Image (spheres, rainbow, N blue to C red):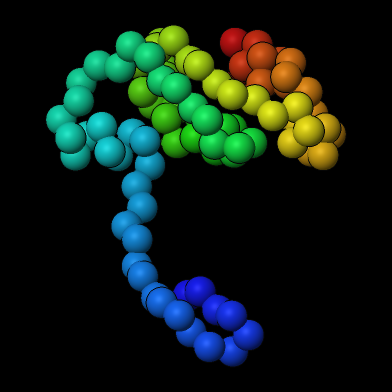
Length: 87
């Protein structure tokens, strides 16, 4: 719902699905590249694409915002450390 002061302008329901769910519904069986440019929310996109990434090992092009990482007390090396620790 969008509001300016107390007046409702518009209400819209938007369907949501994870990356992996969209691939299933669209009958896409292989992914070779994933480009992510989400203003700092890339980690959530990667989590929602985990099954596809694990299965296909696509090239990942990720626009990482350093200031978002700093505010989360993280760095560009953090996802690499997390993945390495799981092996």
